[in-house]
Length: 507
Image (cartoon, one colour):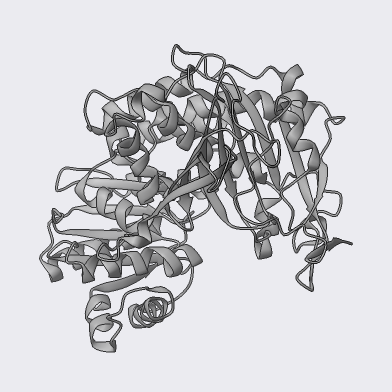
């Protein structure tokens, strides 16, 4: 693959978990794969008072702990971190950014790097504005001497108004083509394969419409709870944390029209058209189309699991949702009348993200099934953890008669033993280095997604009577979530439900 130009990566929040667990191991993998710039330097920045040597040792430990590479010799790791530096910065102090500018200048001179800089905001969204403003004031946003690119983690804003305000502030300081709003789901190989599955296979393209598809289901489930992030999560919730970015982006890629090319804007234009075609959910219809829940205490495989309201940092009277499911439609020629169902939640039975295409049944049930249940064909695109594609269809059981059994034809990326599957952050960081924005959200996408979510946020804020359903940790969410479906359909359970009596009991 193409090697990027020489550059400096500045990470704000360099002592945080995201940097240690994801960013540094991803950069190390790119180095091992010879996909890094020929000359590269990293400057960590944060409020912690560290020397550059202390920062290097911390990052070396992160690589040893979290990297999946085989080459983890001390010599290789220390060779990689030898160009790491650290600069302590109080984000609200403009003078500290002058100090950072001097450190960047010294690194450029020492490493003979042209002034190409990527700024990564591995910090809470509340700090985006102040950091960007101070970088601009210090002259670090100017592209006169080299490119400047800014990476922002989700969520980008908290609602429509805040996302618009953030975009307005950023556009006064930097251009849209300098901004990379990162969504690590879009860096996954299987998400990108959505485009190939749809547009490279003649067997699927004619069926990908309202004539043959009954409904589409998108699930992003986590088996863990909020852990030590209760204070943050209680101010965010599942809707704000997952839906405007991860889930709607997957819907966009699943439902978009063929792009005119693989150019970044050609693909993002088609995703935007899908977002603009979402049938608005009226506030008075939110209770019928959107379901929210909150996990309660239970016993899972003999372990006592705490209910959400008793997690650290969470208000004991909290109405913050840890589960959200919704039904909506896309008002365009291809998808008119086809319901889309999306759900996400914590403390569900397993960690899984997938897109399921449910095809319409045959017009006449000619063959008998032992269970007297008529299964529709399903195409399952597994995003994580076991990336792959699975097709469910009917076949005749061996023996006399025409008894039919539902079978599966599946492919797993892990079966390609000769192919290494890069992590999402590897792909996305490399794309930013190359200036490829295909897998990053544009400002108009972000605002259109928040516009679709806004009536739900307003309804929940203005109508206290809308219920927050409890669900026992280890189950697939509130039982009432199946009420979103028309008669005869329910949510797919991607793996064995941990709600079996011998595995869990509600406390």
